[in-house]
Image (cartoon, rainbow, N blue to C red):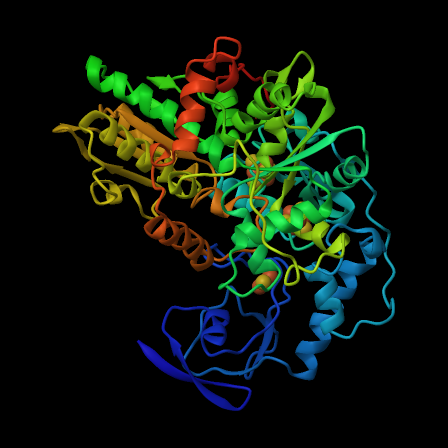
Length: 573
Ligand code: SF4
Ligand code: SF4
Ligand code: FES
């Protein structure tokens, strides 16, 4: 039921049951928030969203208070502005004065609020929070002194990621965001997804930066510098740089990477095509042999860590195929290097990805050959955008270029595999094509698309129903387990940790609204519709490489190149 309220002397419509904040936002009235996150239960912790309501003695928090018909609200009265200013001043009193050296400088909500509230001097002095820098993990860095205790990370890790690796520790002045037993990250159940980074308003949580290392190697003539990038990287970078959509983002990014000093540019999507080839081979065998168990597939290293530490009773087979990044990493060091007359250690191999967990994955022992990493450094999309600025590259003026052989192409199967459900869809469609000789198109598998955290469908391949489940964000994993314990069986299960898939990875520009994530997925599907190469086999270059260099190569057998092993992980839960 809609009714009208007065805000700053103007009548606006509000909906019964909504919060004051929601009514204000819907009417285009902006007020600052810190602890609040859309679609989360408000905690009312920061009190920055306070407003003055006539007839109420105390200021009230707009994010947690329901709007009422009689309300006459003032969002920017002198009393409100003073209260907000004091809240930020109190936070700054304990905060380190390190903005110039902070990874979030110019991209920090606290800094922005201090500026908006015209805080130009230190009025309140407090004891600075003790510096505690946790760099023990390969993906996420914690700088506790920069934390303002908004609890966003705690709620995301618990409610969205469902891992609960973070929580409040201690009380009063000693309260901080900690992990189990307050140990460093590398001992914990954190799966490196980076979703907490994407919501942290300050520099308290950020990805482990590889920029400085990559920069150093780029100027080192002793190495050949090779870069690969994931399918969603070019369009995201183009968007971040404000490039017109009419420009081909992939060729533009190739030009930029060459200007930065990379000698060879490869597409990670080429690795995804090989992954799709191998997975569909396995599914084909399952269908032909009438095997009934579940095959778990994924291109998500965060899921692999979760599986290793927390899953021990899942019936079925977990695919041992590497992620596309690591497939490409292995191809670069074990195939491309000898073909180019180089030793693997003479190549510096960089991957650009929307995912923070890939940093962890690249450092796994199983991803090295005789002590040499297949991928030496992993940059998130955010880090690459920073590097482009660092190198002073004008993207508009940069000529488009082609990527390099052998991995200059990808099919659109690789593009949709970055959206949750897309890998299963690509594998199903390709298996159907191989078994029947006809491409069934995308229509029979469209039921795998969607936004709910658990989806199931039974598309047919050659008259046989294939029971497919898609876990879209780990919250859907509980539902999968529930279904399995109630006796349900699946032939194929795809799991992605980040809701929406890699297009919502922890290394993407943040914060992303649900609508923005849906748009990224829509873009991937639109690209697929217009792409003439929709299956790996549609490109002779991809297919022949797979056949000759992977399937039939005795020196570099597919097993070693493409497959990995898992370990049982003991972590603090
Ligand atoms: S990286 Fe993911 S799992 Fe780790 S603390 Fe952050 S949200 Fe939780
Ligand atoms: S680490 Fe960041 S998101 Fe988490 S409570 Fe601190 S400031 Fe908030
Ligand atoms: S945003 Fe309302 S209390 Fe923090």
